[in-house]
Image 1 (cartoon, rainbow, N blue to C red):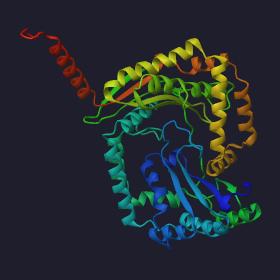
Image 2: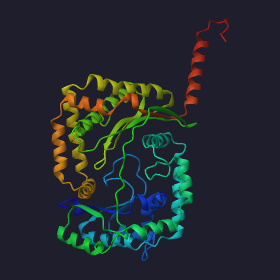
Image 3: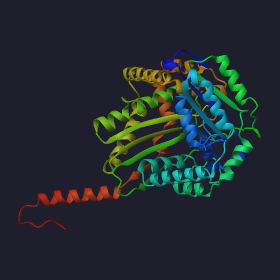
Image 4: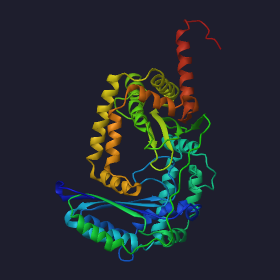
Length: 444
């Protein structure tokens, strides 16, 4: 907990409740996905609307997320993975006690109204229906699937969008209730709070509200396993969509306490995780090809598993050139490295980004809760920053060459490439016709 003065006496908090095991949740992923939103849909004392009105009266925001699937390889502040309820809270010190009482009621006295469940089902199906023709959503989903080569019966499996539709249609309210009554409790929970509050009072109230709420069965973390994948290129057709998505990636055998992880972080910042990065400067600024582009590198805190990916949103006719530019920049950084001056400038930008992130009390609260689970303190983050400050250009180059192998990349393109090709053919034909002298015959 971090107690400090804040503007408007604001308090941000995160509660994380862990439940279940691989055996408990396999085959029930979709039911577990419905659990967080269903908790907010009503209690034995209040309807959904009454909960919303009461939160508004208390000048508070409460969100519950989490679920039953691994979410691919993207590391989250809650430490990722299935079997998690992540509760974020924002309110004032004056109202904190009443807000926590309401949160405890939401978590411990859900009513699971059947009409709200069907409303959620319709909303989920409508959302997927919209995404099934969206290049960005389709490309992202397909890349996650390719980087996560598990059988459909594995809880780590990433379902396609049609499969998601079938799973959502098949899930029942009784399955959601069964997960809650059979698995959920506070025996394996963590809390992080930042803002204007009295730590002793807050600890006492949390103990009173959740101290006797035990998990019916033990929580067993589901591990994530690195699996190498074969390089391939996949093209997804999205007719009549004006934008295209180009994304590429590969799984990484890395953990965030590995010796060369700091160098990998900085290599990713140099390449695409910065507004002044190589990919942004080449693809968006110099070539004018993309509406947005960048790169992401993640590493798990407990398992040796991470992800590298790069992406670009562009017009379909520019997709091939955009991909070529991205591969050229990756290859150039691996072969030629980075000058000391560029590294120093990027490192300064990284410090500024980190400062902005740490200025967000909600982010810090989530980090505190996560570090409790990982048995870490702020010293880990301080040490990581110190290692980044000491990096040499050679170390950054070596880390990128070690982890990002262009010959092993999975490449996904999604867009209306048939229409863009037809438009290019028409344009070329018109150009040829324009070059034919008057009275001449245009070649067939």
